[in-house]
Image 1: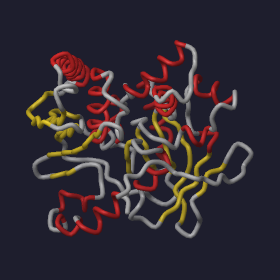
Image 2: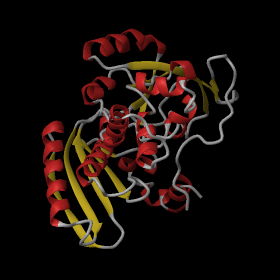
Image 3: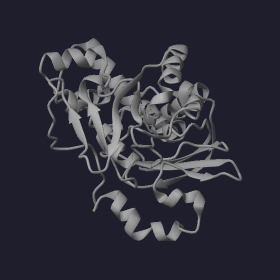
Length: 319
């Protein structure tokens, strides 16, 4: 079973009487009366990050991916806790200094503060981050409306190429290698738009496991389907050049996650305010599809107006 089936079968009932748990089917815990928003994420070497050769970059990646859960809900991250398990090699003095320095840089960048954590000796390297913010309002999952437009911020797919480079499955020139690898380690979080989302988004999620996987999570308790247009899904010029050279298919690049852009739906009447917000903040926001009735099958339409058949929609943890 995949992780969501596991949660639903064994743990959802335990949280049923706690409305703040959101039935364990959202990115966060939300206690409206206390204005408290919390998310927890665990990262394991070999699964969530390739290796620990660049501890300074790995720690930035996992911290950004953690606070992204709050940002996509319209909440500003304020505090975080970090716990780590590792051995003398992974937690050497040099590595710990790099980790500390990187966390300091990220704290300055995002105005967040370390509050505590834990350390454990283990030969399996992992980290768990708890992110905390405060708000009396968030954007929930499963609140899409029929005929909502589907939007995405930024570009998708660069991180996928960065991972391919790190795995030595593709080799480009030094400039492109650096560009894509940086996109893998240092996702562009859309902090400036976070609060603005509250004024027009009906539902939202961040892209961690792939566009299609996360879109289906976004509406998994609703009797809806979706229609996406591949030509409208935004990618960088560098990635477009690779695709034009027929090195990769666009659908594969945008389906593998680690982008941490914000996926949201909004009523078509909100299109003007979304366009205005995009121009005002200098943030790319692209309309990529529509929420459809459940009796229609979800589909992706390619540039030739043909339906795409997918082998994989993205990443799932399977048990």
